[in-house]
Length: 443
Image (cartoon, rainbow, N blue to C red; front, side):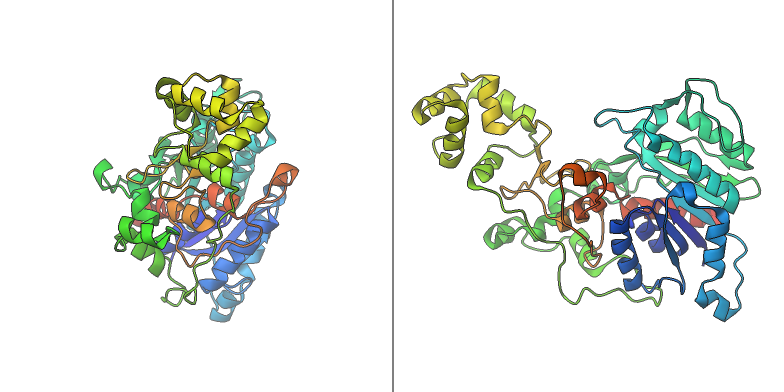
């Protein structure tokens, strides 16, 4: 069995795919205590026990050294009892935090997280694995640096892009690289359009790996309905919309990730992380205004061009009248004619134009960390953590621990369940990549 290390492991999306591909994870690390709870608990479910046959280290990557990692690996009781001395690691996987590179929102070239991939390279140089996999957002590919000095001491001209630096650094460390490639998770069975930049490097003495080929055509891709139709809360709606389990739903329920003893972990018949937010009546009515596939901006345009009947939206009408100082009859009349101002639309919909009602017959948009960004196509509500996890391709027996959600300044420090899910690498995408590393190792 090949050996792997997972850095910046988060709650464990990448690790799930690595294990599904047949790797034994010797060592993993993340800086956050919230994800540690989820990650260690999941690995206990899988028979990967802390200090016995695997080691999780909660540490800042800037403080993590090859010596620390090797000491942790060589102290594992299982291998010492077997008289096995692990001399090398087959692959290091990792996804340095991506917020500084993201195309969503403001990109900050001075964000200190941008330099964490340099620390990733440093650890790679100290471990010297056969293969290296690095995952990041698309924006990483066109990020340019100023005054960047590499792990090897190489100084790069201002404007050098992140991929150029990566390929040069790997070459100086004795690795060949493939041209970086953007992969879409929906091509590999994930019911979500999630594009990620992937970098593969390999020691010059090793077989070159390949990027995984798409496994699904557009017509075959797993849809939102395929993924979560069985999780509709309203039983009557569920029976009509999802009369029988789909293959994806069955796989999610049964599980795709096996324990080290070859068995599937059990959730004791309990489906975890299914709690739903309790929405105020006017919020439910606001959600009902969205048609499938529409975001806030599209709803605004539709109202302006076609008008909208708010006659049966009493709670929402009352709320809008309070904000606008209007009487109900006049407000309903103006909205029906589409004769409304931006202020009126803000009162009706809020200014959050990113909010979207997903289309049941399409793959999901990229799963995010905020629970109120997306509306269910089946019911006037946001998604549960479990539904978001399904859209990421996590098994149902994977439990997310800690707070369900958080807000305000606490978001800078806490990583609640929704964030753990949204930040994760989809397991099925990780598996497709890890399987290609396995093929190269076995060649």
